Length: 121
Image 1 (cartoon, one colour):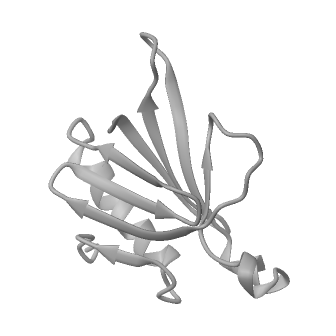
Image 2 (cartoon, rainbow, N blue to C red; image 1 turned 90 degrees about the vertical axis):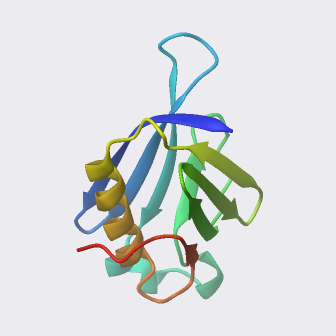
């Protein structure tokens, strides 16, 4: 399980959720980033559309988000290549609410299986 220090989000042409994950060494932070750009997605082939996932430790492997499940302080991301289990117990409640809001927007076409993500207010 990867401990998450904080989450940043963006809502513009790009919808971004980036998890700041504690690395192996003190002060080391790695990024696990979810990205979707609905405005330009029509340009892509259908099999390339969706939420792209990038993990800082990987090369330029492309993978898409298939599902996200939150249960308490645990978040499980399922991609086309693997699963990530994140511990979000250190993350501020406001950041978690903003994350849920962006995830809902990313899932405008219901392509992602979202479980335990409450509707943002």
